[in-house]
Image 1 (cartoon, one colour):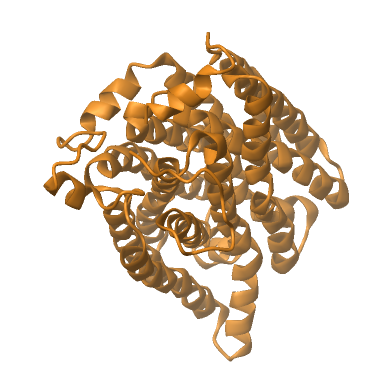
Image 2 (cartoon, rainbow, N blue to C red):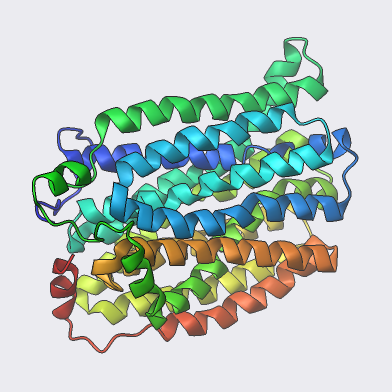
Length: 432
């Protein structure tokens, strides 16, 4: 593909590259807001359905389990149909369970719709795919990390805003039992609005839409067979699976914290629902700059060194994440817990950004497959953490064990190293 943007003109919507950049992070923000909208309301929902800790663990697992499959699928779908059609379809179909969860009348029905909502987490793969095909190698790390980071902030916004929205609805005279249902309708409607905007104002790549390009005889990487060739190529690359593990240890932990933080602050420190939501929300809102910072630092280090400089950065960030998570698990007061969470969160978000600053260089001709498999790793990590919590029955103990596993996963990060000269990275990226 040609005409990739070599700079990020943040306040411009004049080019297809910048329209894609802004609409991808906006769509991702809405999807993450919807994905985690239930989490800060779980203390209320827990009372509504008399949920046990085991049932809450099942709900958290359901919220991320289906995303593994959908992330594996949407990467190749992007290769074949293009990110514009794929994202629009995900937004429309994903809105159905988001609206459906508000009508739940039992633990079983809530669990079913929560499972369905997990599909919207696959929006991350489309976001990273779309920015990867729009931006050139010297800025792709920054573009990927910024779009993902600002989108990820939707999870933090949900933590902070959903309790406030519930409070506002209750103040209008609605019962709390009905209020959380009304509040959960909002993200579903936002997804449908975003689907219209994405369809109308984006295109698949700098040169146009894939369907039109193929009709004109222009070759598009990924082929015409659904992009499964790119998936197979990615699946045979050992570096993809190493990053699958490391992404599970950074983004997977991020998802897990989103799902349990509010309950942890309420049960462990006795905070109110509103205060717990604000504390938990601060972790997600770090993504507004921290994930982008990971991509920016990765691009800067690569410019001064080589592709392995990106690998070294990821290794350092993973070690920092593990140490910060241990501090958070052992914090004996709410103030120290929040500080520890912010420190640990900074390393976690930066590690996520550094991972996807490296991803476009793994196999540029199989970008959809690479993005999908590594992205699915994040959800595998979250599911594993959910099962660990179900086994221990204790969030603090789970966090302690996870901190050790995160530091071990840093070994996978350093093992990604390339035998490339410093000037080989642009040439590798040019192959896309």
